[in-house]
Structures are given as structure tokens and as C-alpha cells.
Length: 307
Image (cartoon, rainbow, N blue to C red; front, side, top):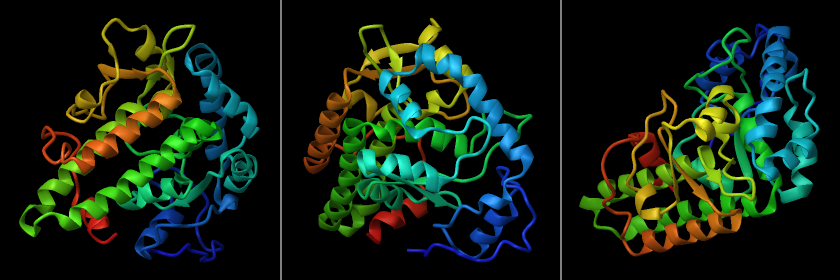
């Protein structure tokens, strides 16, 4: 596993803009996945992007987000005008659930990502989108990760479900060792695809029932100004009580608003679903899920094989 980088930033140009950050490019060239957050490199443009993103979400969050997210936002004490320091975030977060944000230089292969969750670490992007392009971008950024994901990590029941999901990844890595070598790639790819779909329709794009109707807990929705409203208000969105057999066989596309969403009753319900996912995995019921999105990369397969 790559070690955290501590290379000096004196000669690196300022700016930590998504896809335009020399610091990230250098870390990637060095093969360093786990890095530090060089806070001094954030430009005023970067802070302006955070300020605009955070300000415009306030009304949407209070209207559509679940109560645990709103408590989490309050607990983390974000500065609305400055990109957060991850050390400050962790100072508030860790005492609540043991979770902490862990800065990374880019894509984290599937097993490493899930294993971080098992260890109560959340791989966190440190770059931020441009202030004049606040809407959809395919790459995660620090606003998606810190304002979308991390407030949910302040809730014990939700945090425990994430850890349990990380346990499932370890189970998958162990199970595949008993599969005939000729079938390992197929079975493992199917299991990873099932896990990715489950994560997508819960942690990223999940809805929750409440006394006030459906509320949002998925980070992809919580960090999207347009889709957080669309997912609740639009008649074009299908919303169903979550069923594991549907979720693990349902593909998805990332470049448009989601037309199909699922809701849970509580985070205890979510934890039970993760338990069920692992039970199905052990019974071989994830070995041949429906083909299609997401595509499982060689890096994802290798990360499980090497575990």
C-alpha cells in the first residue's frame, strides 16, 4: 500500500482545482495514493468555489435532507467561506463515531476503498471544482466528499453500517480464494458489481422514509443542488422500498439525474440490509448478478485478489 506523501510544496504552483492541480499530478506520478492536504495551496478561487457551493445548498438541505445529516452539518462546524481543513473536520468527527477523513490523490481501487471504511477511514478528495462550474462533474471533489458524505459519518448507526459494508469486502476477498481459479475473475467481478450497485443506491443515492415523507441521505444527492430537489419533487423519478434482489441487479449511469431510487426505513434497516448482502454473498447469490454497469476494472479485481 502506498505511503502518505510528505514531499515539499514550495515549488508547486498554487491551486487545488479538480483536474488542474499540480500537487495531485505529482503525487500520482510518484505512485502515492494516500497524501496530506497541503492547505496553503488552496487559492482564493478554490475558497470562492466552496463558499458558493455551501451557500446555495443551505435551503435545499433544510428542505430535503434527513435529520441526521442536518445534525452532522451542525456538529462539524464548517466555515462557510473557506475550504475545510481535514484535521479540523476530524477533530469534530472522530470523537463522535471514530471515523476520520483520509486524503487521497485520486481513484481508490475497490477493496482498498471498502477496507478503509472497515477501519473507519473515508478516502477524501482534496481538490475542488471551479467556482464558475458548480454543477455536475464526473470526478468527486472535496465538496462532494466533505459536505455530502462526511456529515452522515457523525451518526453512529450510519457509521456502523459503513463499517459493516467494509466487512463484506473482506468476506468477498476470502470467499473468492475457494472458487476454482478458472471462475475466480467472473465470480469476483459479479460480487464487486453487486457491492457497487448496493453502495450506489444506498450510500450515494439513498432515500429514507420519515414522518415528513421521503428525505435524502445519499451523498450524491446531498451534494447536488439540482438533483436533491429533483429526486423528491419530480414525477419522473421512480421511488421504491429497497429490495436487495432489485438493487444488486440494477445497473446505473452516472452522467444524468437518476430515474430510479430506493428508500430505507432507518439506518438500522440499512445495517440489516448489509448483513443480508453478506449472507447472500456466502450463499453464492452474488456470483451471477445481471451484467451491465458499473464496469469492474482490472485495478478493482486486482485489489481484491491481493487482499
